[in-house]
Length: 104
Image: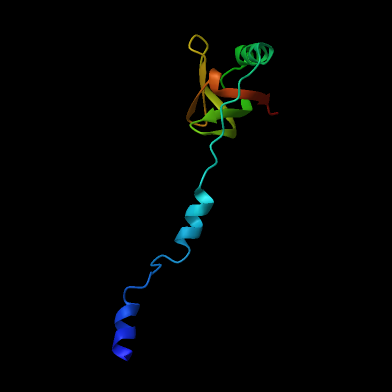
């Protein structure tokens, strides 16, 4: 009888990485829908974008893949024609931005 119990125990579930399942659950992301801005909001963002210069320190909120991200950093490059900029080595399109705030 003892032999059967020992043999059966080898087929029981084994969590080789303690806490791995918990860590995976924490990493699950909630998919956020992209917000639709009003025409007025788009115009305000476009005007703010036109006043940005390289070296400005900004706080931006923008849509990336399935979520909104907030980033603070220096503007390193700007393309006014194609409407994108690089902040903290991240290329951000104006169409993905929902807020721009200058930080002193």
